[in-house]
Amino acid sequence: MKFRTEIQPDKAQKQIDYNSNLFLIGSCFTQHINTKLDYFKFNTVANPFGILFQPKAIENLILAAVNDTIYNEDDLFFYNERWHCFDTHSNLSATNKNTLLNTLNNAVTQTKTQITNASHIIITLGTAWVYEFLDTKKIVANCHKIPQKKFHKKILSVSEISSIILQIITTIFKINTNTSIIFTVSPVRHLKDGFIENQQSKAHLITAIHQTIKNANYFPSYEIMIDDLRDYRFYKKDLLHPNEIAIAYIWQKFTETWLNPSVKETMNQVNLIQKGLAHKPFHAKSAKHLQFLKNLTQQMSVLEKTKQIKF
Image (tube, rainbow, N blue to C red; front, side, top):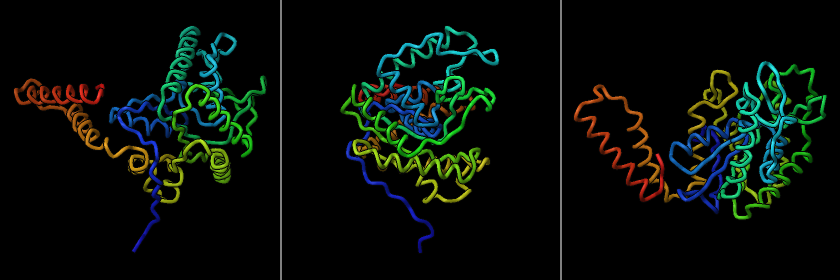
């Protein structure tokens, strides 16, 4: 007897191994996947501009990186005793203007380098709802807690999102035609927009992606959460974000789809080392623990030499 419907994504053709270079950009679910990849010591970089929820923000920053855009004072504003940029997450904001400019321009350089060298680029779209700053008529990536009356909230149409996705793909392929681009929709529920509005938003994203990704791939993060897991026990207390069990399950599906089976043994070795590094001894200077650390160092050295893995 079956009590749930399990999603089995098709195996990817160009799978990820320890020689792959990964670049991730998008919503907070991007961070979860990147945390897993980083734990197992894959070559990965995520969100140099901070978390980006909507497709227009991702398009703007990929264009900025590929076109070597240089941010200057005109791109910044001062609010609540901090300098901000409407293109990026508030995590990049700073009390010093030059600090923020350096951060932004370093992120541009890093993003272009990652796109140029990436074997795989994972793009997670979170919402189709956007905020347009009334003073400039520009869609922003983050409102930085400026009063909502300063913005016009609207939903991007399917055709608008399709155009954005096509521009993202085209821009990436300008500097890297060999990369595999993977789109996914965040399973996080954006109920601050409303129940119906959240479903409309996700529907716009999914429809636009599937209308456009002839030269890209799709991983069903959203569908696994909504149709496979399908239960509030897989959410955090806020009932909006996937909990650790759900993230681990989606990660398992991702590994089955996108990770080359040849990496499993190395991942197991890395996992044992990570657990060893996290171990808290009762007696840090005991002979037994010092020998444990010596063995751990030797294991790390072997992986660094044979697999070029850096701990």
